[in-house]
Image (cartoon, rainbow over all chains, first blue to last red; front, side, top):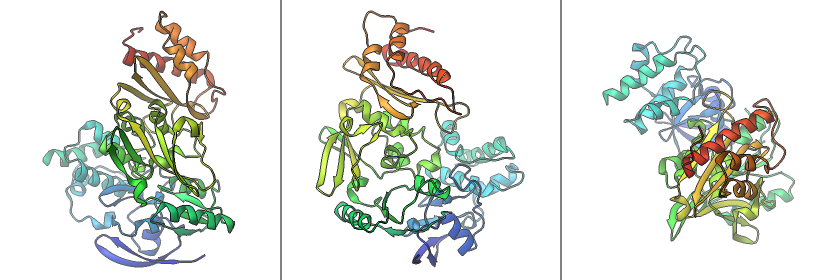
Length: 151
Length: 280
């Protein structure tokens, strides 16, 4: 099958990459670009471990074809530098094994950007997209609220 | 990761998309229109969907419309459920759509994709069934506007190569009092046991249901029973339950008996919310 040479904007850097049309964004960013922060979990859009941001909104990168990302701004966990939510996860010990953490942080980061005044219901609705098998939910809630309350 | 590859096309116009489909179909490539694409990606991964040519329609202008035109609200088929929720121009649709999948996934799932889904819940269609909406369909013979009731019988009966472009809904339905609830087996994400959407217009309650049968439906018989005057609410609900379409789902999400129990309670909730009845 033919490969497509496309240009991607990831973490404010331009990448020229050859992909198959059926490649998912998750596959490309991990396998071709070495950005392994987005984690493969269910590969079915259920767990949220692969969440990245696309044009400022959370996106499960296993549910997106790489070719769909052309012309979009993609941010992965590697593109976040000393953001308040990263610090809040550390301060609130909002993880145990850490596998779900990049996905959770990317979702929280989008939430804080899109809805800085998010109420409990909005927080719950957004974060239901991610699963933490270590059940650090209380600490994750504390972390995201600590950032929202500061704004 | 998909176990097969395909050609990828991104036409800019409806005509181009329709012609591409014809061309690729003649080549035996089993073309597929693609909007959010979540169903192709998830079902394709486990060999339950296949195509050799994807036609991505999500950036075609007519499919991205969200505007009031005269007395109608037009909503494009390739808008994501999140875009529709954030704009909140049709509160019943907002509520019903917000119960589909989860928030991040709804940033990918589109209105048309949900309505045309193979996975049979297709909850986003319920508000349009209740509102007697019209749908705009593009095909080889150009575009047409038809009543949703004429083309949606359990699923959207598109002809091969046709595209759902937009829905058009009269504003009086947009403003009508409504109820929408998705009851799950447990927790707050996942497939429904039953989703009920309802609205009240011209003193009559309308209901549409997903998750009870292996297709979403709105039933005149059910509504006639629910609106029967001079009867108690319990009798009206009993009457509605007696005329349901068949078959009732009986699967791992819930037995048929349990689903009927849940529906009974939801219909009571509908009457309480929209008809002011008190039973419990």
